[in-house]
Length: 85
Image: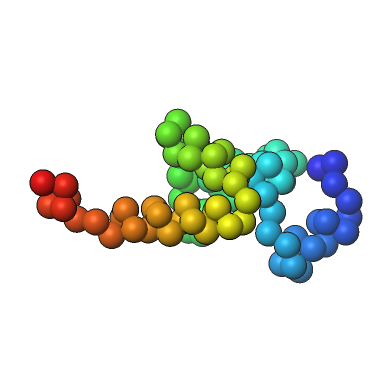
């Protein structure tokens, strides 16, 4: 994976949160997709182009901006369709 054993140990001990590129490398080594990696029920999820782009943009944010982006999206998801009329 081109990372130190210490970094792998931290991931398993959950003392660090892996970045998207790290998760991609883990999936490549394990021969699985990222959807399979995140699957909790064995169901495979396929992301469309827009969803993948959102994850790529999110991955480039610092921690503060990630929290802001999440709060913004949560606010948008709380809106009702009738709010736009």
